[in-house]
Amino acid sequence: MLFLISSAPETKEFKTAFNLAKDINADICLLQNAVYASRNSNDSSLYVLLDELKLRGINENEISGKPIDYGRLIDLMTETDKVVGFF
Image (cartoon, rainbow, N blue to C red; front, side):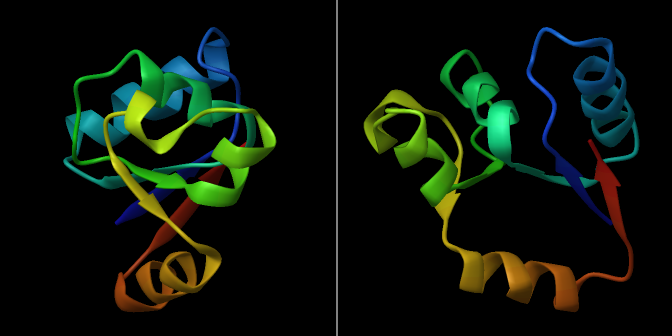
């Protein structure tokens, strides 16, 4: 299962989605303002959309996680059995 999370890290929506994904061992891809969470995490299993990092002035070496492009995001969504979006 792949969780797509776009809410900012300090929001209730982000925390709910992130904790649920961790509880069920789902893959997580951070989009939009959720990419800020990759700077304060030591979780290298996160996927982080590279274009969203660039738009927010975050450098790849400032994050934990795997920076990916849109092509890889599409691959992840088609390879997994379920995709859940939390916005």
